[in-house]
Each structure stands twice: as C-alpha cells, then as structure tokens.
Length: 115
Length: 114
Image (tube, rainbow over all chains, first blue to last red; front, side, top):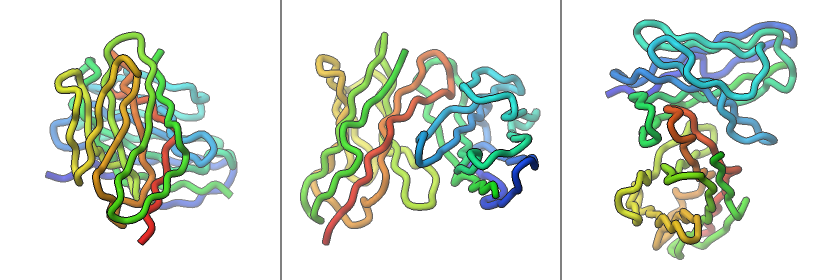
C-alpha cells in the first residue's frame, strides 16, 4: 500500500511570500502530523490533525498553520516567509490512537528554501 | 515531560564490526520509544518500536534495542555494520497520550568505513 506522499518535494520561495505544502497519509490513517527539520534545531513538532481537528500544537508562531480534509489529506501553510523557515518539512501519519503506541510513518519531506 | 538524549553526535565504525548508538530517555511514566533512520536527502524510516511488551526489541535490517528502565536507556545495536547503514539515527519518545506527537533526540550520524 502507498506510503505517505508529500508534494512538492522541492521549492524555492522569496522572503515575505507564503507557501502551502501538501501531505497524503497512508490509506486508513486519520492522524497527520507535521515536523520541521533544520541543522540547528533538529526535528521539531509543528502540529497534529486528527479527523479534521487540530489535536496538538508545537511552539511555532502563528505564521505556521495547517488543516486536514475529510479524506485525511493535510496541508500546512507558512505565511510571510523568513530566511529561517528554510528547512525540510516532514509529514507523518498514523492511525491516530491517543495512547502512545502509535506506529508513525513519515513521508520523504518537502525541502523549502527561502531566499 | 518526556525527553531523549543521544549521547554521541557521531559514531564511526568499520564494516563488519558492531554498532552501538546510545540513547537515554526521561519520562514521567512508561514511555513508548522508537528508533528512526534517515538516509541522506530522505525521509525517516522506522527501525523499531518499544511499547512495554518485550524489553528486547528486534527491528529491521538486523538492528535491535534493549529497554532498560533502571538505566533509563534504549541503546540501538547491530552485530555487524554494513556500508549501507551509514545514515543519521534518531531516538524518539512519544509524548504520551498525545497521539502523533513525537519528541526527537538530536541524532547520531553513523559512518561506516570499508
């Protein structure tokens, strides 16, 4: 069965612009989480969506937002881009049980460069 | 709060020798722990998962990890390294009761010399 799919894989944006990244989870998975990976900060949790509702949120400014559709596909948006937003953005999906035993699968990521 | 500390930022081994990547965790209750691997320019692949069943967990590609509560450790091992094992490895703890939220260690880069 298909894995987690992220689009686009690579993109370059200019400071001040906005960007939308898309994620299609594994079929049957209802939870989608987003992570930012940078050399300096490592992997940091952005937010999680479950059944179209944001269930968890990390410590990122309001410029970072997301949503989930009824088919569990998710998008994240970053507005007013800053140079420091350059990163690999990873999407992950799971069945979404609240207990901590979920197996979480990651996509290949979207590489964002802000110039 | 949960956290993980990977004790080595870089480990170098020769092909055919054992691999040991060290991880300590902090958790206020019984945690779920994971090891993920990331090859260059790739996403994260799950190696193995501990969720309070057996303390010795076997994963893919010959990797295994042992959960030691008394030492709050979850070290990753492999008896014999292959060149293809060269990658970044992340020890991860689940933020309990919060579904899809994972807390990552800083990563250990594994180099394998011929």
